[in-house]
Length: 84
Image (cartoon, rainbow, N blue to C red; front, side, top):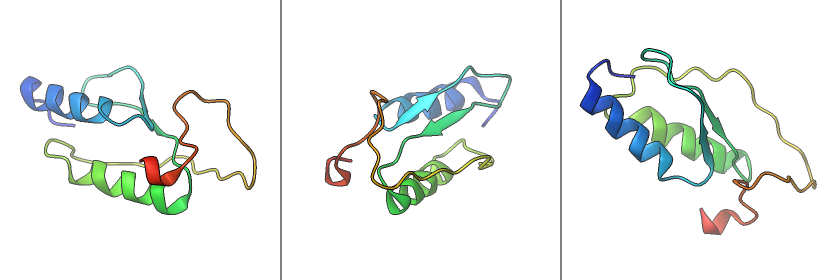
């Protein structure tokens, strides 16, 4: 993420606007982000959206997990991709 404070603050604001995104604690210019997408397509769309945000310098995917047919108890989970 950009080291410019106002740019970084805008990135955080935009990430917070998406209900399927959970933010971790900012560590210098690194911000952990978890995406609770409803399927692979949706997760890819969110990833691509993040990559294109002005101020995002690098996105590193560290884990991908898909559960077939199971409901999640996450309050941020999307139960319907059309709602995204």
